[in-house]
Length: 77
Image (cartoon, rainbow, N blue to C red; front, side):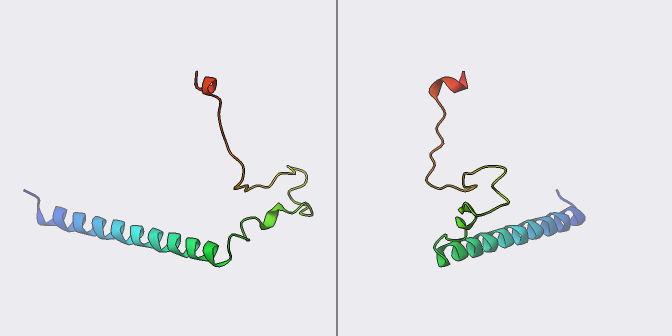
């Protein structure tokens, strides 16, 4: 069926894929842990009005968890 070379290549690719998946999972766990650890304060830190870098662009917070994005039903037509 599959030659020995193809089997080894498939094993190597699946091992690399598993390693990449594990790294992504660990990164996600670290990000969630850090966010829960500081109670989300870092996410809202750039929302101060005194931030000069954001002032020319917008007065709104770049990350606003209280904002609800709703598209009207007729927008999809």
